[in-house]
Picture (tube, rainbow, N blue to C red):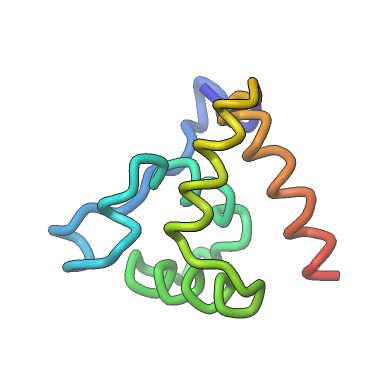
Length: 99
């Protein structure tokens, strides 16, 4: 469980192919972590497709692909940083970018 997840509120998980069709996020080994990074920016009215569109737009704005994010998480793990800690750091950075 990541620092943000609690027993009453589990961490969000990436959508399945059945929910949204083919999307590169679904095949990534750290799809749930990437989904959680962006999760706090999702609005209640968004369905899974809207959320994926939002993630794609944020990545384009930042200038990173989902595969690059996945690879960076792997690099962080190799360097001793837990996925949970990386999620925490990414959320802080994204909040600062949002202003």
